Length: 341
Image (cartoon, rainbow, N blue to C red; front, side, top):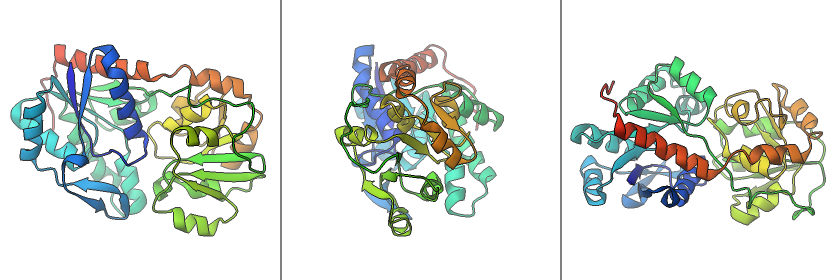
C-alpha cells in the first residue's frame, strides 16, 4: 500500500508533527506500506508572519493534482490544515479521492494566544476541514472527547511513540549544571507558555532547549536560565540525561512527544493537569500534575527514574505506525460516504 501524506509541517522544522511523520515513514515498510510526502519543498514558500521559521507554501490545486497523478497513491492522508492541506482537500473532494486527516495542533487556541480571533470561529473552520474526510486521527482520549463535544465526527486514535534506545538514563550525566536541573524542550513561543516555567522560583538550574520567536525576549528577561537552542539526536538525549525534572508548561498541546522522550530518559514530569500530560502521565505515577507548577516541579524530584522509564516503554513507534495504517485500511474497506461540511 502506497500512502501519500500532504503536510505543511516539514524539515527543517523540529516539532511533534514532523517527528511523527518521519517515524511513520521509517516503520511503514515493515508493515507492508510505503509513505510518500507532499511538503513545502515542492513549492515556492514565504515565511509565516510573526513566525519566520515556518514556511507557507504556494500550493495551487493544479500543482497538487499533478503530484497525485504522478505518485498514484492507494490512499491520501492530510496531516495539516495549511495551504498544502487545503489544496489537497480540494483535490480529493473534486476528484473523488477518499482521504483521512489528523489533528495535531490546537489552532484555535494557538491563534487566540497571538491575535484577537474568537476560538469559535476558528473551530468552525477547522471542524469543516476535518469533517470532510473519512476519519480524523487524534493522539489521545482527552483530545478525542474534546473534539467530539465540538462536533468533530469519525474520530479514530493514532498514538505516538519514543525511541527508547536513544533516550535513556545514564550512569553519569553528559552535561554538568548546578542541580537540581529543571528542563524544558520545545518551541520557545507564546503558545507554549514557556514563561510560566522560567518565572518559577526553583533551586538549581532551569534549562531551555529549542528556538522560536519568543526566545530573544525571554533570554533577556531570565538571564539565569540556560538557553541551549535547538538540539536533536544524541545531543538532545544528552540534555535529557543531564536533568532531574522535565517541566511542561504548555496548556495547548494535543500530546507532547517530548513527554515520552523525558520519561524514557528517566525524568519525571511536572505539568498542568491539561490535555497531553493527562493522557501521557495520567495516574501512572510518573509525574505531578498541578495548577501550581512550582509545587509540581518540586514534588516531581521524589519520583524514581525507574518508574518513568518503565512507563515510557509502553509506547513505541512501530505500534504507532501500525495504528495509523490500520485506520487507513479500515477506511478503505468501508469508506465514509457522508462527507459532511
